[in-house]
Image 1 (cartoon, rainbow, N blue to C red):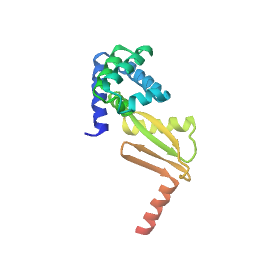
Image 2 (image 1 turned 30 degrees about the vertical axis):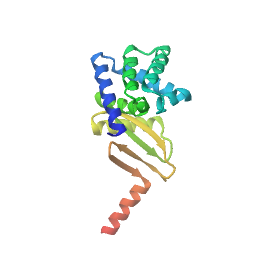
Image 3 (image 1 turned 120 degrees about the horizontal axis):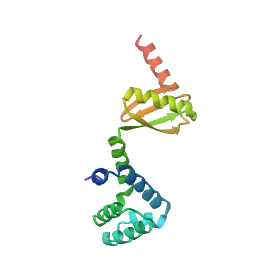
Length: 180
């Protein structure tokens, strides 16, 4: 079974727990903090990712760290189960899968925006409103600068790409001229 699929199953279980406790946003924030802590501490990251540390030892040490960090009982129990199942190495995939599930649960759609130049707040707001109207969902825009674009932008929503780049327009023009 693929690592991503396993992480998605754990993420789905955590979301179900969060919904039952009416703590979806709280657990999301807590998970984000824990993943940030793991990422910022090389020793803690090695603990999570190293395959030769016995799962029971990982579970005990990670639980102590979570307790010291003030993590909730729910998160501590969840990670104890994950660590004892020898799946703590999936912490980053689990984080991504959980955030995607929460977004889907809350009706939020993520879009990746690649632009030739950094976008202003006004441009981002306008783009967000335009795609929210088109999809009927709340949008979360993730922007990145793409120096390969000469001008314009590309927006990817799920598997659909909206190409408003200069290269895209030139390609469309070329196709029209060649087919005429």
